[in-house]
Each structure stands twice: as C-alpha cells, then as structure tokens.
Image (cartoon, rainbow, N blue to C red; front, side, top):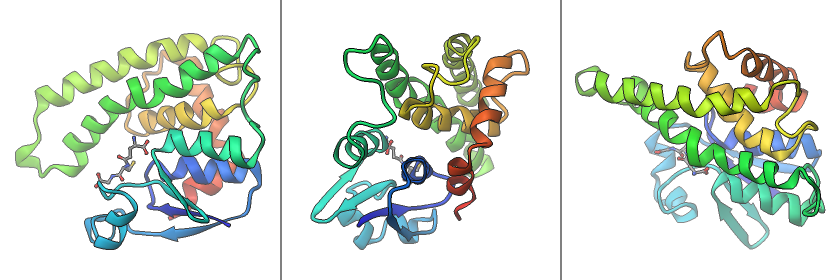
Length: 203
Ligand SMILES: N[C@@H](CCC(=O)N[C@@H](CS)C(=O)NCC(=O)O)C(=O)O
C-alpha cells in the first residue's frame, strides 16, 4: 500500500489529488505544517530537509512532488494521465509539468516567506514586490497557453496536477490578475474536480 507523508496546505496536496484522480488505494501520515512534526528526527529520516511530500511504496521511499507523480504514473498506472512519448502533446506536457517547480514555485516560495512565515519586522517590501512581479510574468505564458483550452494540453493530465496546483496557490495569494481570464477559469475548473476537493479539504 502506498503511504503518503502529508501536511495540509502544502505540495503534498498534489499527491493526494493524483492518487484520488487515479483511484489508487493509499494511506496517509498526517503531520502538522509545523517544525515540531516536519523537522522531527523521525521525519528528517524520511526527507533530509524535513519537507513534504514523501511517498513510501513498500521498501521504496521517494521525495520531490514531480518525481513522485512520475513514479506513481509509471509504476502504478502504466503511464496514465500523460500523453504517449511519441504524441505531439508530449513536449508541451513535459514543459508545463516542469515549469511548475522551475518557474512558478520559486516566486511563490518567496511570497509565502515574505507574507506568512517571517515576522513582520523581518519582511521586506522590495523582495516581496520583486517576487510578485516575477510570478505575474511567469503566469502570463500559462494564461496564453490556456486560450481555447480546458486544460494545459487539452485533456486533463498530470501537468495540470503540478502546474494547476501552483496556479491555484497563486490565485489564493491574490497574484492572478483579473485580466488573466483563461487562468481564472482554469483555476475554477480545477477546483470543481472532486479529486482536487478531496486533496484541498484534507487538513
Ligand atoms: N521541490 C519540492 C519542494 C518541497 C517543499 O518545499 N515542501 C514544503 C511544503 S509545500 C515544505 O515541506 N516546507 C516545510 C519547510 O520548509 O519547513 C517538491 O516539489 O516536493
């Protein structure tokens, strides 16, 4: 049985979303999003930085949300939720899948640090402003790519689980401008998926 080490309001939600979409059985080790759990010796043994998500599959342990998604698709769903390697959608699928952690999450991380994690006296308006502008720039191509499409490559895929989750987070942080209409409806579409609801409501 797959076992997901999870904390609420984190990238671990991506993995719950994936497992729910695939209807795979799994169990959850719910931790608090707090150093007492994440930085405990027990959890640092699972992840050297004390982060989530981490997935156990029998004796196999793997971290990094993107790697976990790929692992689950290949080992447990015969490559489901992704286009075939020789399909014309495959390069776009890969691009958006990796655009998530590569381009969108770095400014989101900074925004979260500068607005939620740091005490007010250590928050820096300049750093926050730079990150907000970078996030807006990084989201613009996603908004464009969604023109006339329900999902990033047309059909729902694991790229939507990765990047869609970041778009949802960006929106929740108030960083998706009203003019990004494709992105706004995309976030709405994603939040209506039952598997997404299960993941986001899990606390
Ligand atoms: N690139 C990693 C990032 C993992 C990560 O930073 N997770 C955050 C939650 S979204 C975390 O565990 N933060 C706890 C901390 O930094 O103490 C992934 O995609 O899994």
